[in-house]
Amino acid sequence: MQGGIKGRVDSDTRAATGGQSPADLSGDAGLRAAYAAHGAELYRFALRALGDIGMAQDAVQETLLRAWQAADRYDAGRSSLRVWLFAIARNVIIDLHRRRSAASWAPVHRTLEDDGESSAVDLVEAILTRAVVVEALDRLSADHREVIIETYLRGRSYQEVAAECGVPSGTLRSRMFYALKALRVTMDEMGVSL
Image (cartoon, rainbow, N blue to C red; front, side, top):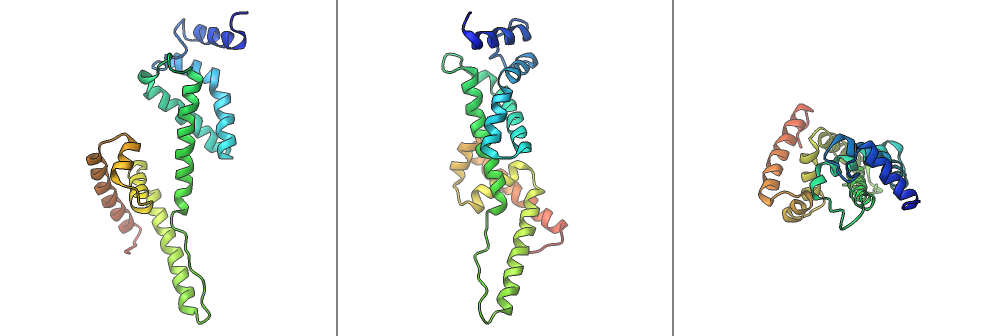
């Protein structure tokens, strides 16, 4: 038995890809073979981490998309395809956790005071303002939303966010300019002025 189960999976994936290595994700057949060999494990991993069926499915899809986009950077000498895919899945899960928590970026830390009808009104207004800003952010593109959340709301530096996104700092600053412009237009369309 050549390599046990792993050997059978590799030979099955080579057969499915027409003799290509299963690590060749640049083509459709290689990607399908990788999904057939590792998709169920990736799904269980994502489901366990995220606790949501839909998000777990999105995580697997995003993992394979990123693997396809970075297929030229995969080095079979450094790690197996499975290990590489799980590393990508881990990063995707972290990104999804960040996006999910973006709605809770600005918790309202106010308490009602004893004299407080005005403080109750202020609290309601703060909650409504937050809801409007969250809705406006949801209407932006993913890149614009991410740069605003990471720099303005989480207080991270441009260099740090640029390194994480894999873009030059100047590109990130330009993206921020257009993101704020788009946010203003979106809020104007919503009839909101802050």
